[in-house]
Length: 228
Image (cartoon, rainbow, N blue to C red; front, side, top):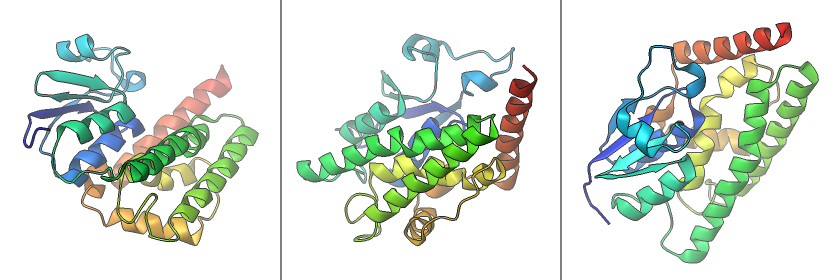
């Protein structure tokens, strides 16, 4: 494990998968350089990808992280790799059984709540948007139930499960403007507030202009799909 490696994150604020890594790096206090690489869907025609990104990101998608002379792509493998390679403030418990709980909940959020969130964002048909909103409500309620004993998603302190959840929380205001019209359960509202108080939150959070841009992009996407 390296105490103070040279770390670079290739990513962009619009990408929810990169947001996971932005949060984890800041939460752990790992000094790093950010190389701004937009997601493929929003790269301008004149944007030139860094050569090392082309070489080491198999699908040319963000996020990608460099530690020293090594590279990894894909957010969950990156988060695990950072745990193995960087010493400060780990977000995985020392006990292996506790780690298994964190990892299981990371996978659950990724497969369920994240998918529902993307369904709201990318939805075009009102019925599909409503169904995705219903699913997101239920998924967040389930996550809220996990927090009822300790206040956190897996254990008695923030873990990588929070890193997976934070991109959803960051987008809640925009998702409401895109069709997510449900109240959150009290437990998940409390968890959102706890996450907002964490050191990693400012690295992930959006300002009003970023929320407006997020909403505008998906409204334009819906108009294009509706015409097509």
